[in-house]
Length: 523
Image (tube, rainbow, N blue to C red; front, side, top):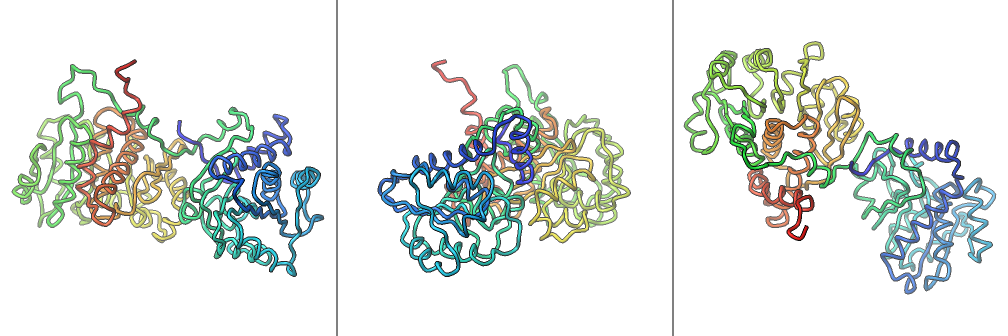
């Protein structure tokens, strides 16, 4: 399983269970948190050469800062600790560690409005600033008053900024950032990473992310394991192995139903991606007038000309496909089909005939799911691959709102759609009907180019055809798709990246994912 990710609210519940039911005091959890932050700092920097400033707020995030400062006492060139407020405003575990820091010899200076000049001077002369001001409890639209002034100094500082748990001013659940939120070079988070670390724009404020163990029992963490970050070892375990005696029929007969006049590229990209992703046989059903183009574009795929009207597929194509007698193991449905009434009727009749695994993408997704009362019900959950505009149309939401709330929109909408939902973008979200969610971190802005989604559709269909379950086919497809894009960008640059480059780099992506899992020659 990949790294579990939680919301701040879920993390607070984990802390509560650990404190109240397991019996580990909050002061111990805070001690472990601050020690972990100090440990990361000392592993990354020669602290003995640095002027370090610790900025602590009045809550538990500030308490983590006090512990961090205590572990840095005597180890830095200079250490200054500032409390944004007054001592009598600090309560509970944070007050315990404030007092402990002072008994250990630390000096904590209170900052009020009349001492901002002193704080500004210290922060702007620091080599390293520890931001322990707000933490994951922040959920507002603005950072006011003393805290806002302090964060302005932090962002003007030439020193390295290390955030405790999350940069102050960033919403730990949604990743939204208030104006003037702290921009960190690295963030040290407690127990488990938070959703806001991976969602935009929060990921841009987080910098390098470190997660420290604060002593929460694994059994407590496992109870909150419904959301995780996809990682290469997990993807490698999902992929099918080739043992030796197989033939092309053993790796799936995949049908790609795609393309229309002017959009032959969508069909070609999906088919080529399916082949590169390991499908044994790939069939491409396109309007018959497009066959000369497809014969030129595709060498390895088998072309199936079907009836059309003005370059777009029509319902009679279902009978044409049925008469082939081919038992398709998976279908990719939708790229470049268009949205005419005849296409919609074809799709509905096709689903009445074909009941196996399939990917529903692009035009097919909109036509089949925009009417909530007539959405298809499938025994095998389809993989649905919309971008925010397509999901927004189906969910009656503004596409920008979908994009800005992509994690929670995907988790909500999957309950209404009856399939594995892949919400494309950064990060891509894979939400499943049983409540499990993956966040995929591979991929880069160079992939914001026409046709990259068609490549993903073909890849997922190929994995379905090789017998993978819809959830795993979607997760592996998304991860490898993004990884191929990252490898391509390293060689070509993001600006020059086009969809067909992803197909070219798929072999390298497979090798990179599989390499750690393959036995070495020495073993």
